Length: 496
Ligand SMILES: Nc1ncnc2c1ncn2[C@@H]1O[C@H](COP(=O)(O)OP(=O)(O)OP(=O)(O)O)[C@@H](O)[C@H]1O
Ligand SMILES: [Mg+2]
Image (cartoon, rainbow, N blue to C red; front, side, top):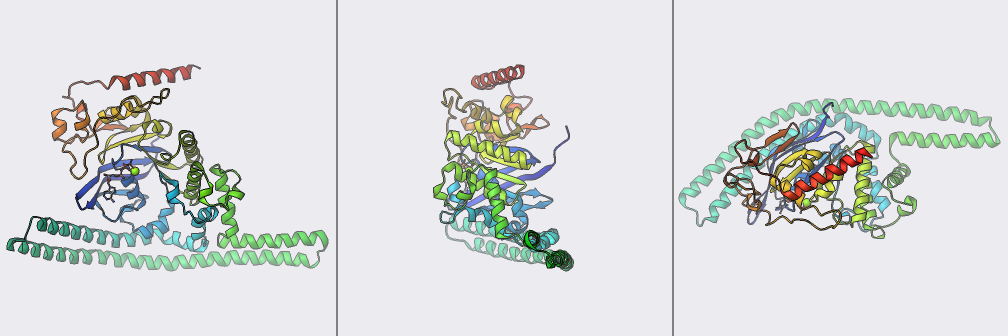
């Protein structure tokens, strides 16, 4: 099988949050690839860093976030270095996101039709879109250089600030402390100057290229407009010529043609309100909202939770994204509605050939969605593999614990709750963060971070149990039993 293309790649991402109690280490060295047309499920308990990871991709992290390392590559660009505004304007419409609570992403006092057409109408000027498209690569390169410069200077400045505040916490500053601070401040100033000088030189060259591209793009847009206008005038003239000698039914027909030509011409230059509405109704139908014409003029409160989530999905789709990120999109819904929304997401993904990141704390949901699974614990991915590898050949004790805690399909009861609580992420444990809650923990688990051991080309797990010298342990009986049952069920299905 040919290897699928990677559409998004997260590499060694580290995200901390500054708080009054200290630095929260929310995401600790996370890497994964999203493959074209696949769904990657990120699964883990509350607080494991799932939402922070997805917010970093969308460029919507809270203000106290510090991106301390790594990159997020999309189409050759590091999304972490594109300014939010630029990201939104040019590339932001390629990635759509659906949040847990549909109410919070809808405006309660705006009719849903308007909310669905909003994104389309913001980008309605086709000539402007064409211009933006023509210059986008060069604009991003230029802005990136400036953003990179600012990030480097900001990061140094934040380091300096936290150094000073740590010193002041210890009590009154000594003379040596003061001298030290003065020295560090001088060093920072020099660093800022040098960084600026270096990047501004690059930026100037890139700006020259950008200006040239911009002039060319303007000319191309003008040419396009002139061509479309000339074609329109010619067609119009032809119809008018015929109209001169026409009468009765033929005249009516020609007048209709004239109207159509006018609409057609306008649609070539911009998306009209009527066109935006037509598209909105089409998408509402696509996501299974009955009677879209009537629903178009209603407010969010007039919809059920499941229908609201469909509207949120519709809004995400208006901009034709390439990647869809769903952060616990069904947690607030009851089980039947949840199943319908999951089915909808799967259908849309297949029809539109989207690549999906699907976040959930429920491995039960993952089974029906995922091509690949990343299991997250305490800010790290502890196991990563194809859906089959995670469900039929799990290796990390945390994955075993999650699998044991999936509610039984028949009794709906959780079989084994995971004992203990996740660690405080201001002081994450030294070794395998799950050790304190794991009956399989060995001494080394408390001391040293396990590396990723390779189980197959697509399957990795960070657990010392995979070290060649580790004692052989078996996964919990209940997990083994479940795997046996589902393998049996599978083989029956094949026989039928
Ligand atoms: N703005 C912030 N300031 C401080 N800490 C934060 C901030 N945002 C998130 N965190 C912390 O980062 C960690 C990861 O949070 P995140 O929201 O990614 O968890 P999650 O895996 O999405 O959990 P859940 O299943 O509850 O949604 C948590 O410890 C959380 O408290
Ligand atoms: Mg979350």
